[in-house]
Image (cartoon, rainbow, N blue to C red):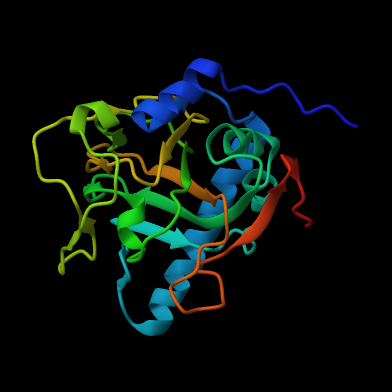
Length: 254
């Protein structure tokens, strides 16, 4: 039997994920894969602009032209992006969080344009599903260096907010965002270099601020579930449901 590669995730980080709902891997993404992430982002933004032009709008779902982009479920469309989505690094994160069986549930670029990026409210990713489900893991990868000024993500430790379960969220009709926490707890800002991965549970509250710099701020989010998630009464998987790990081994075939 082939041995698994050495994990980059420490026991301490695994414990932190269980107890606080998150951990951060700094500079974990190799430079070659970071280049793929940047080129794929440019490609998908151009494609979204073309679709906005076709529809005669500046707003698709929660994407706003030249302000904020959420480009979802396009990992197969952008050149070579699958190499990152199903990489050994993502497999390593899945093993340490959701276990030895994992499916790609969702992927999206989250982009805040220079001096235009909008803030994003405190929410749980699970708050967007609308039905009871097994929690999954979110990998928020910094495609650019992340700072307070450019609106990096903030993650709320379980111990700081005292919430470990799904709560009801309220939708903001003007932006399409959902929010589930309105208190004063600050959370932990991810002030990290490009190539870092913020790993958190779908039950962890997180938010991001506006981008006040003159540079675009790009992050790529991949989410992995320990089972295929389906809406009640439906046979088709919700979102993606692509098999990734079986018994801890990568099984995705390009």
